[in-house]
Length: 246
Image (cartoon, rainbow, N blue to C red; front, side, top):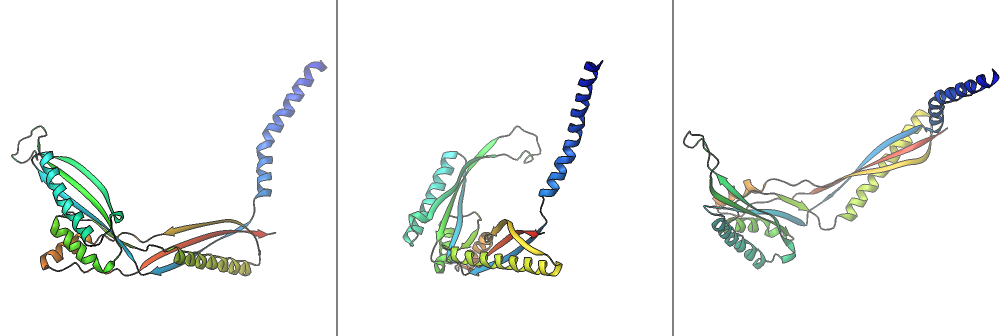
């Protein structure tokens, strides 16, 4: 009789232990969890740009792919040659996109439903240009359009070496976060403990899609496109988590 009861008791004890273990783990987790203060600060650096990145694109269409490619190659070749002659270095020129796409007849042209029919080809060649002399920017855009650039793009005004300014913005963001933490601790009557975590978010200036409108307007007027560089704003957000001393 005794030999039958003891194993049952042992099994019941193990079952109880298994049942209590999640609660015990939760209690242990509560002990380890710290009370914290989470703060964030923002810093900003403004710089006049010293570099512009242009996207230029040439589109040519023809009945055959070979003809479209030849026309595109000729136009883009002239653009690149003139850019180099105007002082743009080879290291500042980079092909950014190249595609050959068939053109299909619109099935509604004659109000009849037809199978897709290729009626020609379109070749697109994109070029990224880094302009280090911003005074030449308007003339470069105007010249490129006259030589064959016929697709819209974008201008990104940036800085060649913004690291020092970004560091100052980062310091300002951290100082603001620390000041917030001290204010919160004082207002709530607690004492700041160790730093648990630090993270940051960094935002660079966004591209300005003004390229096509500026080109088309000033081609009609016969004058270089008026481009204003303005200022670049580099924004840094610093997040700090402090433990609260118990």
